[in-house]
Image (cartoon, rainbow, N blue to C red):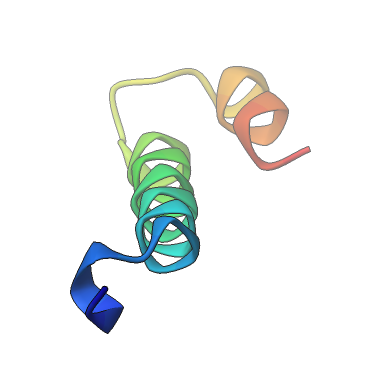
Length: 41
């Protein structure tokens, strides 16, 4: 099994992608400030 096929690598990449989506939502100007804070909590 190569490192690219490792479930641990995929899980970590998935977690990083999720965090990026949360930060994107928190920085999205059209979302109300309190809603953005909930994304970061």
